[in-house]
Image (tube, rainbow, N blue to C red; front, top):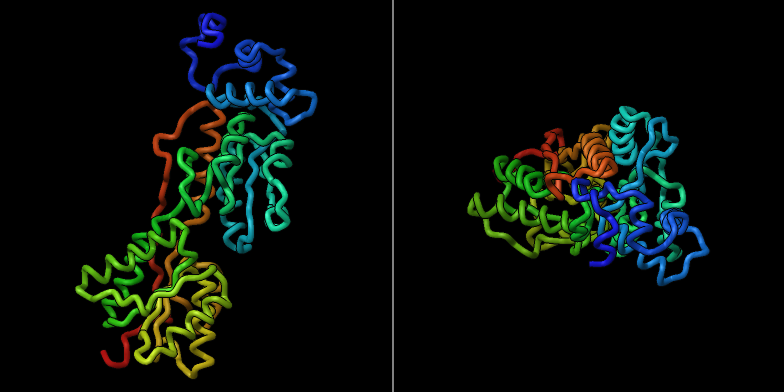
Amino acid sequence: MIGGGRLQGRRGLRRGDLTVAAIAQLAGVSPPTVSKVLHGRTGVGESTRKRVEELLREHGYRRPVPAGSARGLEVVFSNMLGFIAMEIMRGVEQVAATRQLGVGFTDVRSRVTAGLPWVEPLLQRQPVGVIAVVSEVTTEHRELFEARGVPLVALDPTGDVHPTPSVGSTSWSGALAATRHLLELGHRRIGLITGPAGFLATRARLDGFRAALDTAGVPFDERLLRSGPFLFEHGRDLGSQLLTLPDPPTAVVCGNDLQAFGVYEAARLLGLRIPDDLSVVGFDDIEHCEWVAPALTTVRQPFFEIGATAARIALALADGDRPSRPLVELGAALVVRDSTAPPRSA
């Protein structure tokens, strides 16, 4: 064991309790060298940096958060709708305020688009923890955060980020409830527009959709399935494809509300009325759902609670605790409004 005899008397410490001085002892370097690695500063050889980062990850080092610290939580977004981002931020801020911590906001979309790194500039601000609401979180990013002793929590990640803690909503049960609602109204030809095929939430919602059909004894028709980005124009184009089929659906479940608004437009262009000719269900419940006509039936995601839960996990990690569950899913609920009705043939 490397340095096995240097840390006598520390066996009772929890993972993450080792100090900078103890990490320096294990690495055979000075505490200022470890500090340079933690803060991303120059003046450290590459082999030494890697050795220190490996020890920091191995021992789960967490930077201490002194009382009255000016450091805070950082929330990282990329291409996020304003309403959703604000709700997440409100949840994070409510929890951070209990520790008298500030909350920073970072949008990395331009850096990601330009192929530039976004983790290092963030780490230079020495956050207490980072909540990532971006799809571009990778294993390499997680290792960078771990090596600097900064807890990372992912919100609704698009891929498997285990063992990084993550928080999201129950996409499977949300899609199940949306589809079951349409089935109970009498619909049998139900279209589905999902998000990008590789996203975890997309797969979960497709599974929930199919489970509702299976339970009702309704065959799944793959001709009524489309997938694409969570954007208005894709909802419009994919919706048009479904609505111009020889035997079109009488209802459509969408991957998010923007896609649903796109289906509204596709229906308008084809002279169809909602919900008389077509029922539509969205996913998210952004504020615009009550403003459109007819008001959109959708699945509400608890974005405020998601942000608050992620903040509590990040602060617990900063305190050296480990979450009891690596994945937390909060309940999504169907909100029935005016965009759904029985089909004409029912």
